[in-house]
Image (cartoon, rainbow, N blue to C red; front, side):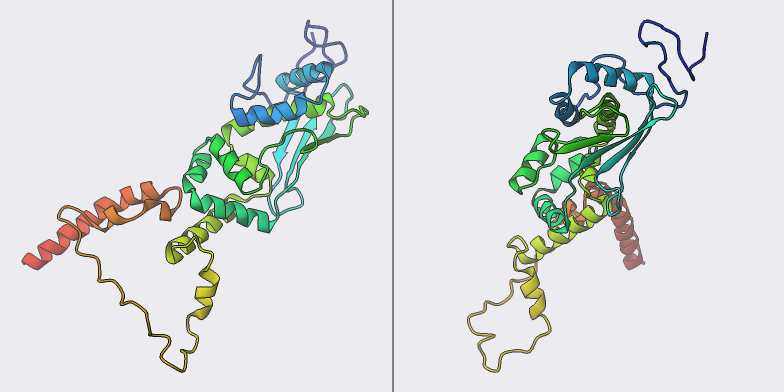
Length: 295
């Protein structure tokens, strides 16, 4: 009886001559759907709507048997951005190369996403926490951005196999395994659009700071910053009609601290955790200061 590598014998699930690599990627799914989340299913639906039942069935079989040997999601900012590069073992000795491609977002589009997330940082916090709320997709749509593929016109597939029909069974197998990765890390959806995690967090933080400083959504921030350090008007028009600055805030009530008035969202997705860690430190410093004053 042959082992896991090389030519397999007929075992009721594989036709003679099929090669099953020993080092293939193994999915969690043993039967039924691969994706368990709505965003993962959206990816598989884009392929399933275009592929025939036979190719989909073989694609699922290839995926579950571990015939996808390699799967790598491209890195934003490089030539692999927006691509999934995979290797699939077919019936021939040499594996096939499969590429899935999504259109990436340019710098202006990523800035529009950051503006939208600055207005609703909870959406980004959810994605970083491992879930993709449907409100996130709606937030993107409101900003004119298509987040998830709707058909093969959005998600292109290519393979070095001789099958001229798109998608082939090898590409379908890759999509099914990709769907499980999307279930585990929904930020992979943004990565496929060319969005870098750290760069996006920095952009959102900048937009949040601008919104807080300007109080008008940050639209006037560049103009205001340009005025700082410029010459004052020759006449007294700079002062006329300008109200005095508001008085300083009163001291916080007893039993509270400056942390209670802090908007934790300004510190990013981990803001609440950061505040929780700072609170005992501030209490300790306050107690030490009280002891020094009493001695």
